[in-house]
Length: 280
Image 1 (cartoon, helix red, strand yellow):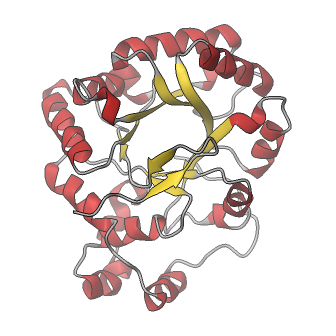
Image 2 (spheres, helix red, strand yellow):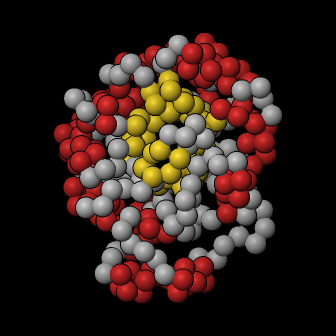
């Protein structure tokens, strides 16, 4: 199986364009072993970027990740997120320590602000930089930031250290293509796309049937391949079953043609003007 394509963070570090999400993992203890096994299979297949958050199952997803990467920590690029309610100088420090304990690791590779809250952005950035200096995190970034938020961020003294913006992006949610994606691409800041299959709804979309048929693929795989069609976009689908993990990995090998892309544009029109940033 070919190696997974990578994209480059502003620091120059390469990360896979296809990772693994953990939203809704850790909520049912009876599924813990299944979820751990799914993540471990994904690592075996090269999907070594794993995204989680303190919010997911109130830390339960981070515990699933900890068990999945046990004995393999050096193979994995862990992304976690801090809630805006914990985004103060001391709040970030405490939240990060709790995440480190749950993840059973000494360092988080990429630590994101989950979305903007009432804490001044400058204070959160200072806290992130302090965590970097202390060796608790290697990089930091943001999530659910629109273009104006990104401009405000980069105007801060250490704002240019941002490594990614994790946002909702899929065939049915293309608003960021109008300005946010071009803005980030110009500055070589990768977009991390969450819900690339719209929480499963695109997997059953009849609008994707013809393109899927041409490639001998499923609608979900077409939606995922479309999300990763450009460099600088990282997709983080969640899969709890082995067959879904393998299907996600196979999506990376689908080469959408110009005809496919034209048809998908007709079925899922791109934005013609600035759209409000969408969140789930």
